[in-house]
Amino acid sequence: SQKAAVPVTLSPGELLDSAALNAKAIDFVRRNSVTDLSERKDPLCGLVKNGGSKRNALLKWCQNKTVGYRNIDITNFSSSWNDGLALCAILHSYLPDKIPYDSLTPSEKRRNFALAFSAAESVGIPTTL
Image (tube, rainbow, N blue to C red; front, side, top):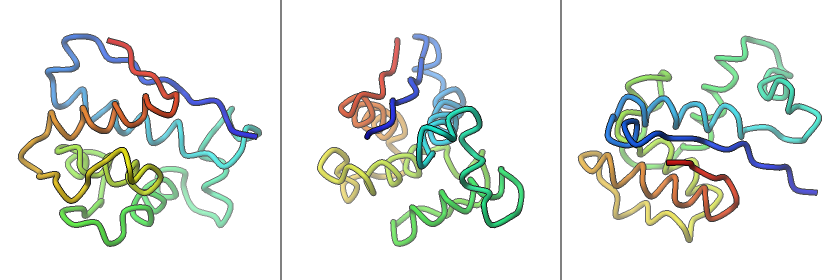
């Protein structure tokens, strides 16, 4: 059975604030990277099965999901997410028909985040404005 998506909410002010969009993207990845519902209480438990911290496990998962994507080098949970491409790449790995990754550029941050959140909504992960 399919797990229920964890929503991402955005206020009108956050939509125009790239730092807020970045934080929401990271929160989205953290809360929706579980393997089954039993891990919903603490979604990162499933990522730590081989030892290490939850933060490092999530970082490694993000790095693995984005191998081979151009303009992506995830080394942290701040600047690596600023242009929206990391979130787009992760979503593209699951929803290639919803994210035209080859047409994205780092300079179009708002477009990248808009595409990412639109793709997430298309599979039932709502964003609230």
